[in-house]
Length: 315
Length: 77
Ligand SMILES: Cc1cc2nc3c(=O)[nH]c(=O)nc-3n(C[C@H](O)[C@H](O)[C@H](O)COP(=O)(O)O)c2cc1C
Image (cartoon, rainbow over all chains, first blue to last red; front, side, top):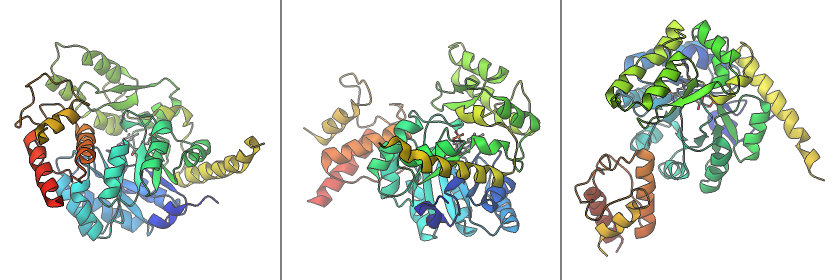
C-alpha cells in the first residue's frame, strides 16, 4: 500500500490525479478514476458555466467519491466557471495556463482545495503564498500545453522552494514513474496520457489507437511562435503546422486559425489528417485499453514493488 | 537610483532594452512578457525592495509597478 499526505488532503485511496484534459476529461472519465481510488478531474477547458454545471451534477450521480475541476485560466468563460465551482461545492480545483491568485481567496473561503499546475519555481511560491493546498509541478514531457522544464529538473526544485505537498506530472505512466516521482520529492502524481487509453475515456477510437501505437519519437511540440507550446502526436496536421511556424509569409492570425478546432476534430471525429492529437512523450508506454481502476491498481502495485526493491542500491 | 531605474535594472534580466526605450507607460504586453515572466519580474522586485507584491490585473504597465512599489515601501516605513 502506498499512501501519502495527499491521500488525506483530498480524501483518496491512491495518491494519483487524472489530469484535466480539454474536450476529453468529462464526468464519465473522472468518475471512473475517482471510483478507482484516484482523483478524477473534469476539464472546464473553454466551456461555459452551463456545460460545467451539467458535468458536475452528472459526476455526482456516478460516484460519491471526491473529484476535481480543472479551470483553464485563459478560457473566455473563466469568470463564470470560477463561480460555478463555488456554487456546486466542488471539493478540489486545479488550474492551468496562468496565475490563479485572483480567484484563490474566494475559492479558499468556499472550502475548495486549490491545487494549481505550475511550470516554474516562482509560480509555485506564488501559489503557496496565495493559499494553494498543494501544487502540481508539470514537466514539458507531458501532453497538451507545456512549460520549459522537464519533470526531472522541475519537481525537486519546486520541492525545495515550497512547504505544501508537491504532485509530479509529465512523463509518468507506470509504477516506475510513480516511484521516481516520489524519490524526487513528490507525494503524488498526475497522469494525463495514460488515461487516454482508459475504457471510460470517450475519445474517438482513432485517437485511442494512435496513442496505443505511438513510439518514443512520435510526439512533436508546436505553437512556440505564438507563445503557447503544445505537445501532440505527429501526423499530417502537426507536421504541417510545425512547418508553417517557420513560414513568415503566414501571419500569427492565420497560424492561430489553423489550430482552432483541431483538438475537437481529433477527439470527436478522429480526423487523422486534420486533427490535433494531444499526447505526452510517455504515449509510447501506453499499450492497451483497460478500465481506469485497473490502470491505477497496476501502477501502484508496480510502484510498491519498485520502492521495496530500492534498498538494493545501498551497500 | 529612482524606483523606475531599479525596476528597469530588474527588467534587464529578462529583456534587452535600449537606453530610453522603457517608459512609465510601457506595458508588459509590449515587452512580450508572459504570465511566467511577469511573476518572475515581480518576485525579483520583491527581493530588491523587501516587500510583497500581489500580482493582479491592475499591474499592466511599468508605471503601475513603480507606483505599487512606492506605496508598499511607504506603508512599510
Ligand atoms: C489531451 C490532453 C489534454 C490536456 N488538457 C489540459 C487542460 O485542459 N488543462 C490542463 O491544466 N492540463 C491539460 N493537460 C495536461 C494534463 O492535465 C496532465 O497534467 C498531463 O497530461 C500530464 O502529463 P502526461 O501526459 O505525460 O501524463 C492535457 C493533457 C492531454 C494529454
